[in-house]
Image (cartoon, rainbow, N blue to C red; front, side, top):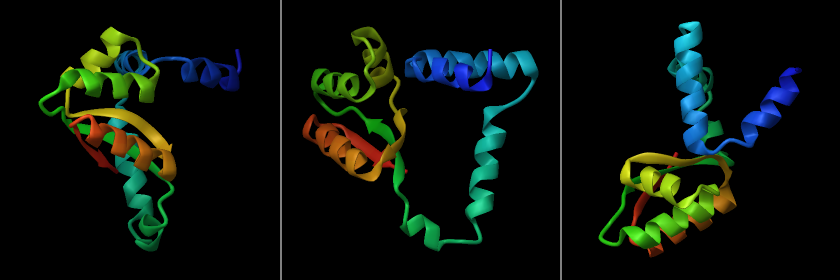
Length: 123
């Protein structure tokens, strides 16, 4: 199986399944995904102009708000998760809803979450 095939299979996973995969890989190989995240900002630290041109965002659900059901519906729409997975994601707030989202879609999803009464952050 090639690396490309593996990546294509990973793309089919839900966020919950991807999270489980990362944890199992960390345990199996004694590595941490956090190390890769730490290396990312260090490379861009010398070029603050790149931050202004950011084209992809991570959507983080900070607070659910008073009405959880509309937030779960938006989370399902944004992630493609099933009802129970989306509920678990919303119940686990603060949580990452989606990563590497194009700017236009990120703003659209941010508006939908705010309309549902949730507080989100784009990073």
